[in-house]
Length: 113
Length: 114
Image 1 (cartoon, rainbow over the protein chains, first blue to last red):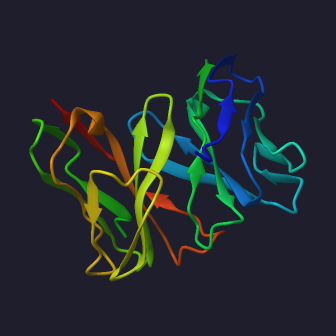
Image 2: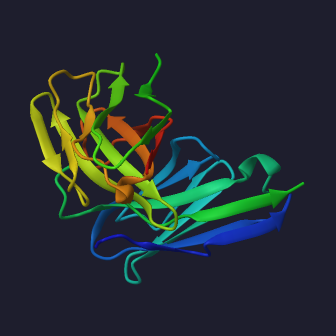
């Protein structure tokens, strides 16, 4: 299986703190994407980082990519209760000629008010 | 636009029954796909389609059939349901299925097979 791994599996923080979650993948990627899933809902695309990029920002989100370690991190700064959700990384491997996403197992984030 | 819609929201089947999960999108997207989500497993790709009349297998295709007769619809068929198919099923679409296209997900169908 090409499925990647994420850690931690669960994270609980106080509002205002930063949350960091990590993702590892198996082989060379074209890009890596992060998605959010609120409880009982579908996934929503957050951010995409290409294999030749090392860092990307979007609002309070910061994503880093280390292709030598085949890993990525998602940092949410100044977290809010509304950030409570599950977060998934998804790799698009270089071997794929379409946008097939291979997901990690996800990190469940709880932000306490 | 309604985006990606899925029906039903919930379904309970008995082992051996058949059913079709419906997925439709109104964004004129060429690429559509089906995933299943199991606890601790993330989402796994079942089948995908790069356009009407074209389908292909994903990571976990066994026990599922798909067809794509129109751009808008991509139904997933379970021919003989098994308890191992108890899961939450998500349909997704993207504009052309290019590697950097954003995928849009439906709200999911929660299926229980007894």
